[in-house]
Amino acid sequence: MAYDEVLAERIRGTLSSRDGVAERKMFGGIAYMVCGNMACGVVHDDLMVRVGPDAYEDALENEHVRPMDFNQRPMRGMIYVAADGIRTEEELARWVVAGAAFAASLPPK
Image (tube, rainbow, N blue to C red):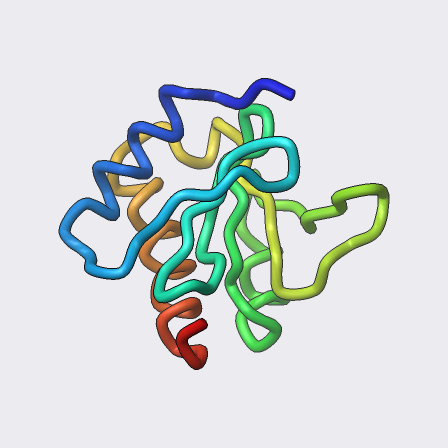
């Protein structure tokens, strides 16, 4: 499956100053790992963010956000943000930083 390369590059730019970031093909797109834990990624043209179970319900209250339902099963703690929700670099950074912070809070892999 193809994924939005422009969005992937924007994420790379947002994460460029953070140590311990790696990329991995995942979910038919690309995922960004922080200390070995998935933080965010791109699936088709959606931003995928691992917000964690505690922030999940609050994240879903935002416009352009929906549960990540890979294979028609919602994954608690994971969301998709549609393109309309990440038009600006500030909007994108908000979600990417949240995903990276959650991933960094987990034990390194």
